[in-house]
Length: 262
Image (cartoon, rainbow, N blue to C red; front, side):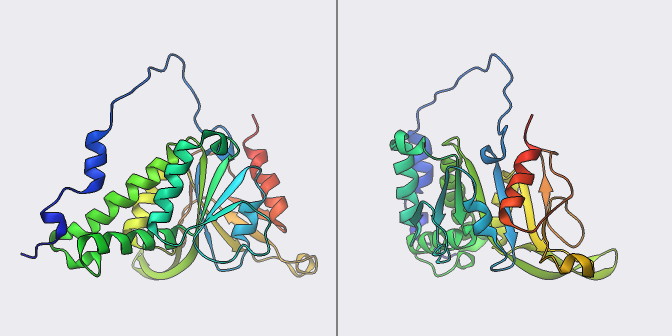
């Protein structure tokens, strides 16, 4: 049996949970949470440079939590996250600075994959290991999942929408006894499990085949919102069509917002 730091001291996430004071409210009337698109939790993924960040930048009140370069051509509000303690500090600041929080309608984490890697490196450093798999019985992965979930949920509990951006990964899977190529968000399985369970919508941004006449008018992209054997997608709200075609990011924003008008 290999012993690590976590074997001899309490995990700080568990310590925070123990110190928390209970405070609840009773709902007298039913409330629709996430009535607008900006109030939802969304995972957006697609190939590099297809326009994911540009799309996100067009929503009023968006605030980028950026983990990589790529916003230089966009005029947006953003905080650079270089490592996991930066993200912890950002969440704490948003919890404390209500006036700043009130100017935000939706946070955009660009990319969630990098943020999870920052968390993984930090947890490994805390545990005295080089990789979560170094601990027996999956304890390293459990420590990572606990830490990552704790802070992502604290961000979500601020009451704003969150748009998680990821790049695309293609893998071969077996479907109906045949090999098919499936498009999914490019992130560790543990990260994807946490985010997938959390979000209301998963959007796959891709190019779409069009006729020669339409090709002359420019490229056509789309969002896929329903899962198939060849892609990950989903829409708990059931407000979005299966496919949303657009030529510009502005057009994409207009079409999506139109789906959430009562």
